Image (cartoon, rainbow, N blue to C red; front, side, top):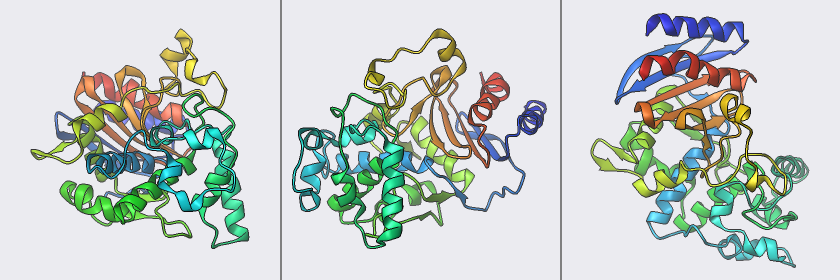
Length: 323
């Protein structure tokens, strides 16, 4: 194992993957861990969109508490923030559409950029109100359009129904049982955790969250998250091809399926991977890779744009060691 991991770090350097940490868990035991290139086991790491998966866990808990429904319309959650005219597409958007990045916006990234720009002009602006005023071009549930603001709406929905910010809702129910301490989560101007980004945790914490999902929501004999929710969030619900009207029906080529971890489909704020795995995925190479067939989890932090090359390190160097 050590020789393979030394080769992994060498290949990372050769591929310009600025890898900061790797933790490998097999059969519930840490079998490898290392921090380099400025990474440190006690340091919080900015997780970017890995935050989304934690938001999904919170949504599953709120649904289990009967505070939210998967088919609930967002216009019913935020009746005081609606535009003067509510179109049919906006009226149809559900919690599930937000979870699967298929709320009907032609460009989720543009929506984020626009709201950030408007926030610079008016720091008191409601992101919820602005989101609901944005054009919904497609029928919800039909087009995959990756949207951090959609995840923000899930955070806002949890807060609206629980009366607690996402981090406060998760701390006693998820973070404390897993022994996760010192979590930090950014907030919007209206006092809502950003949901789709802004969470900071340690690499060990990512490994724990991955193990929780691998265990179908169970931790030390206690069901932390409903098993049914973990099963649902980790399944393919929609094609992960970005922003075309037929994206839900897109069938990847054999070559794409063999070489790309971005065409395997999308669940509830998690990406499907090759090798029947799934992952939490954040910008600059933050990953939690859950591998049910190998009963294993890999947590990685980094600071690079070579995402596929980083995932290839898992398949080329770690997978052969844990089969």
